[in-house]
Length: 437
Image 1: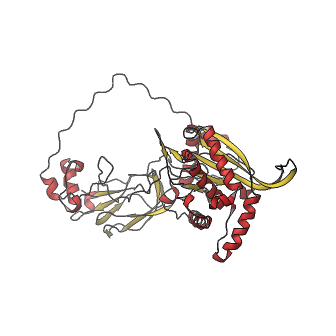
Image 2 (image 1 turned 180 degrees about the vertical axis):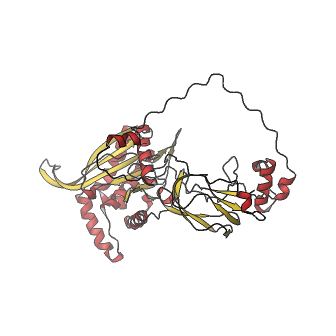
Image 3 (image 1 turned 180 degrees about the horizontal axis):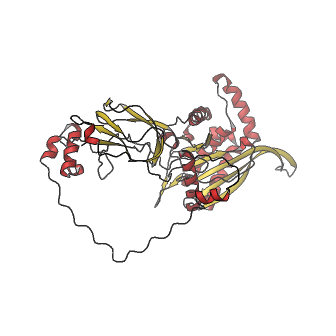
């Protein structure tokens, strides 16, 4: 029986994607490791490899198709001895619409912290623990004909691969009786309305001139996760003004010394370092919400929002507390450049415990950011501007002041603990030389 090639999950949270480009055509012979297609997720375009060898018998989903759900058949692979006649009954499936499930507040960052496992190009069975079962194409075909569960068969081939001999003598287990229906199942609660429908909105503006902007995967994801975050995360907000004069003077001195190395530190580099160190100073805040528990991390992995065309990324600087300012600056510039080109790998924008969103360069005085789950908080940074302040001697003076707002997930961090974290950030920025100690 021909093998269906399924839409892969290229990240732990991917539910749908765009089949951007086929790299093979019907009739092509492919081997394990050959590139089959380019798949566009909400974050990046990634290449998709074949796992088994065979001939591409039929392409079910044309390139350029958006909204293809994970595990939707996208092509059919013929094995030795099979022909196009064997797939005459296989219909081409249109992609099903699926709600976007991944995103962020200012950034559309997925919730998982680990890198995705390599995707399989065939309908490979999996074990109960999620691991892939390795079986030869012939063994899979015989198992399907006999109704066998490959998860219950021990492979005798190399590295435990299931081969023909393993399935020929096996028999399918007797079907278990269907469970009785519940006597009185409670009706499911009605879903809350998500706002007016598309048709209703269109009727509202009938007769008014407008241009319809189609949503791409990233914008759908951002919209879905913004709504989810505001509805499910109990936010509270802490605000502080930070005097930057000492930092600006220190930054100028360091940049003169680093000029020969081609490094130029930004205020944002100091903010990243200040947050990373503060998470070590108040380790209870270096945590994420994990549904029924809190995970407290040891390293300071700090996410930073980067605006790109059509959305945002939050690349993560891992172990930021252990890195020098110059190393953080170089790494951040590289991540930001590749983010704008959508060339980040999933593990580079997933994870972290705390995020930074800086709109100071746009002249924004202050704003409230939305926590990006599963992070415990996010620091919204405004512009630094000269303002009148009262000095320590009671005299009125002028200082460069930057306003910040820390949005916090109250499930992870209580008010007093959040205040301690923000105080540590302020202390680090107002005494920048301490961060080098």
